[in-house]
Image (cartoon, rainbow, N blue to C red):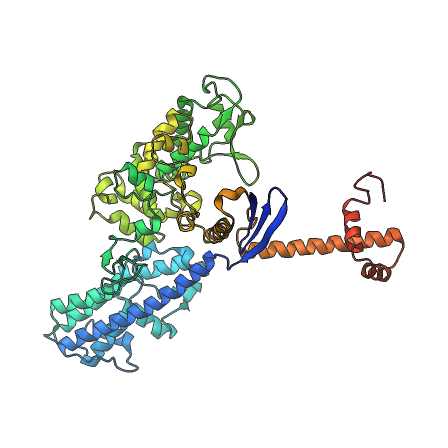
Length: 609
């Protein structure tokens, strides 16, 4: 018995049908309902989880401070209602009582500021405050003059009776209580160094322990858990045998994903996926687009099959990389490079306005123009430079983390180790930090499917031939065709497929659809499935689906009202009569609707009814 299976995949449901091909009999109909995937819910969970961890880690810091206070015999409980801002300023020049010193240390440790420099604060993080940047500059200027955070806070408390939150200062200036951890560390060191004169037990070693406590922060790329408390979300995990192992130094490789083709090319050395904004990825994407084009006109820049020659492709890459105009090259100018018009070319990708498009090295173009402000020519810098920068700004959403990665020289492949001898490097680093989002494609942090090893293997082949990447990889023996890849399996590997889909909504829908198919294949047998027909979702998420349903319902109501009114006018009857007749004749309302949709014409003869 040969069957045809139909799957109607939606955001939160999968409709299915099974038809016996010979008799055309419907064997089974149904719908699988599930909760849709949601990026917003993931974000919400992360936010709550981050808050819980922050509270727990603050408690741990205070507990560790209590141990250090016990070591030297200081009180372990701060004074109730102590004037801590006054005590912090007093401690810089006068002796503090033991209980006062405890109160000061507790206060600094509880509110130790942000972990990065004020110049790396993102204004968009506080878009509700119109003069956010000016407020931050005020704090930075006061710290530069040598004032401690405690002195600044005490002045504001005495003048405005407020320290935290937004303070309405003079001349419509907003004052913010935003200071870096480094400033709290400096204040703590100054206070403890002065208190050494009165307390011999405050040694330099003890001060360093206090400073380490103030500065202590778990890097976000380390993740949760530890060797004593492993978790599948952190670096330390339990294997199938229950043994605790460390998967690496950071979670980057795990989060970004592995390019298994690149790993195969590199003889088993695990290869991480490249940034989608890297120059290598941009060139690869452009060449993939160019190899899909077919040009009707005959000219030396096109081979006998209508495909672009290697020289044409290199000419286009050169033109895009050396474009001195602020805007991108228009399509007409690109097609001129191989003596053709836009309408003579087939195989374009189409944008949302149904106009031809291709990858245009946009991120590189933006970077090149930014570097021109520093009188640095981008084309004189190595391609690896742009790839490394793209990795850093894609991996690190905050300016402070970008700076940390750019300044790092501890590893052989770190930015400074690779490019520390480039001229104007300090200015270039500041430019990268301040314009980090502008240097990403569409200002989005995205990762390519391939690693740099795979990209650099494919790019020469894409230039030399007109083949697309799947054909090249298959010919190289690096990828099996899909019909070979899953040969012999009785079930579709749901996890393997959905793990490659990053969008949580799509991943959930596809995964549930594959589960439905596997259940039907088990029931009717894979060999008996002759056809598989798919209807894909028309919506991006559940909210869009609901909006479209509401829109559809309103359109249906409008059309029904219009059809009833048209029939009433032509039949010269009242609405009450029509309503009564619709109750007596079950399908009358539907016939009127069809009559209206046919504009009053008979669907068979075309005459007016």
